[in-house]
Image 1 (cartoon, rainbow, N blue to C red):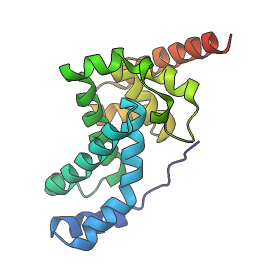
Image 2 (image 1 turned 180 degrees about the vertical axis):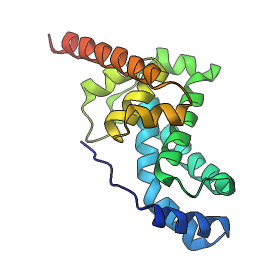
Image 3 (image 1 turned 30 degrees about the horizontal axis):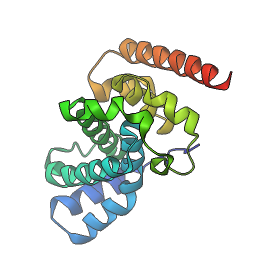
Image 4 (image 1 turned 90 degrees about the horizontal axis):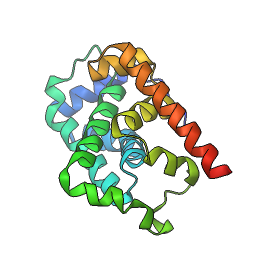
Length: 179
């Protein structure tokens, strides 16, 4: 399982400064460091390679455009993950995506992301988008419920409840698939 690497706030501030000044090296460093985590977060939520690539790119372009609003006393990684998750949820909520979700079962297996347990991925895809995002942030990226709550601007109890419901649903789905 992917384990998050602890960011160094000084590196985040230096990268944010480079981006704020429009330095090409900053943009390159941003894409090198955050493309894969942004893509992975998006893929786990939308479960489409093409959409995840678009969302990851849009996420990093948003970061470049909004870097002036970034609080330099904070870590950059959670901010970027939150942008990726929000963009993924927006993608799922858009009316044109409803058909995509209903027809998800009909997609061929070539769409599956290598290295991910397909039963788990399928069960994750059955969760409501908000629960799916909490599971991704907690168990893929290792954020504590309090950190997720702060990023989502909701009480920590709400995150814990969403996480509990999501994990219960995942457990039930996986037990059904295994039997």
